[in-house]
Length: 183
Image 1 (cartoon, helix red, strand yellow):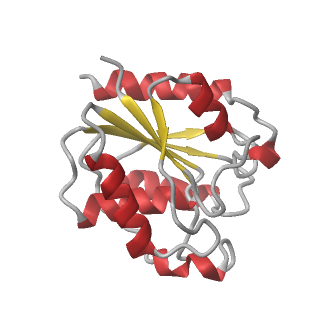
Image 2: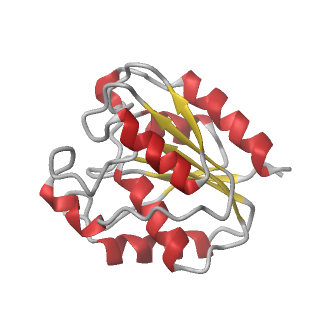
């Protein structure tokens, strides 16, 4: 059975040209986590939506998070009793919610970024010129979370503005996570 891919966007959601939207169309088993307010995120509300979405899925699940969605996954993993159906997480371009120099004030209620080891396999994908997190900070997060780090070079925030389209490179990284999660 193919695992469900729970697509977890960050601030603003993922627009039509974002790789997450392409993946929703490309993978029949993908679902998107929908929030009530994409522009003014509140951690407690976003956590509740994530928990509801996970409870509605009755199959093995991989979390596919981008930006602020990465922080959401970490808060969920350390505050909830992680669901055994969650088999892994692809954590793309984590937004450094601890840094006012990297992230907007509206994300501050997601700080501090949890730095505990995740209870499932994970891969952090980082860019060398991401305006929302420095590469050394992304490396620190990956190490703290027990994640593999993949540096994709200079791809900005790995979003629609990065012009990655359906992001085939990410699909290859996802296959690596699938292999790790089934061991």
